[in-house]
Length: 327
Image (tube, rainbow, N blue to C red; front, side):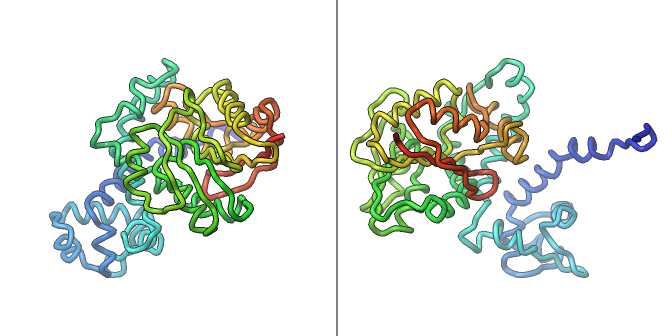
């Protein structure tokens, strides 16, 4: 039996101080500590010289990263840990720096109004209302956050060779790129809003990926596809709107067509995986109807909208895949 003397506030302190760890990480990323140490280990004087920081503040930032496990210190030498070297130094394709910039420059300030957004039932401003200079920060951050899931998708989805994919709400096209790179006979169409489609059109240089401008909620879907991909879209909308979207896709699909829905699917309690449960707050502060949904909820929607639920498969991190077939 637990007594009062057994209870400590350690968990509260650990959670409440989480913002300090986050801001230390964001600052180290912005100030280039990890890139500087990508050149090799350095003393404090060397690190200050490489970053242009005063020695005192270079030490504060570096020691915080040591305490958090992202830097190592051996004697007077600081060095990246394998995690920092892989994801934060800029030396590998697995680059999480854009995600940290997005969370720092966009999400962090927005999260200060989490209580307000939850109390009102909507955010003060939607993410679509960002200043123009932050739009590339958001696009790059989301692409970095989903990179692992994008790379896993071709191997998990098991699509037939030569599939014709409609990537609905496909952002900058990273999901389509992953699919076409895995199958040289696969073609894809990215269907996006005009402002996002413009960015995608500038970045994509594959003759097997086309960009089609339109609004998922109001415009007709392009014809001629046998696979429909809905990645990171469900969490923007209410259950009713998601069902309307699934019906719209079903109307454009021939029987037997495949549907892939990648998102932050949860367990029935909406508490696991933890990252998905926390992302519900991210969506709540950024979009009016933002939320996360369970696999069971998704399967029920599919059954009501002309789809046969195929299964639930992991992709990477908290992002997983629900599959279905048109009946």
